[in-house]
Amino acid sequence: MESKNVDATALEKAMEQLTREVREGLKHGFFELTVACELANCRKRRLTIKAGKNHRFTIPEEELK
Image: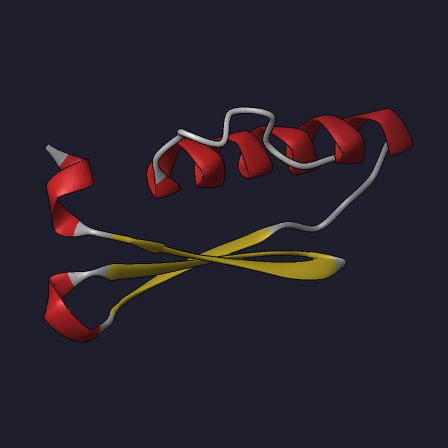
């Protein structure tokens, strides 16, 4: 299930994915979820959500304000 808002920021898309993963895990009754962040080039954040599949988002610093 992809984000329906094509104009959403990378941060909004990441948060939507994180919410989806938690909801799906709760439906199953058990799950493991890992969220990691690292600095990428040009002070962007690379957020990786691992929950069966890996989902990676690159979030510009200006979206964090």
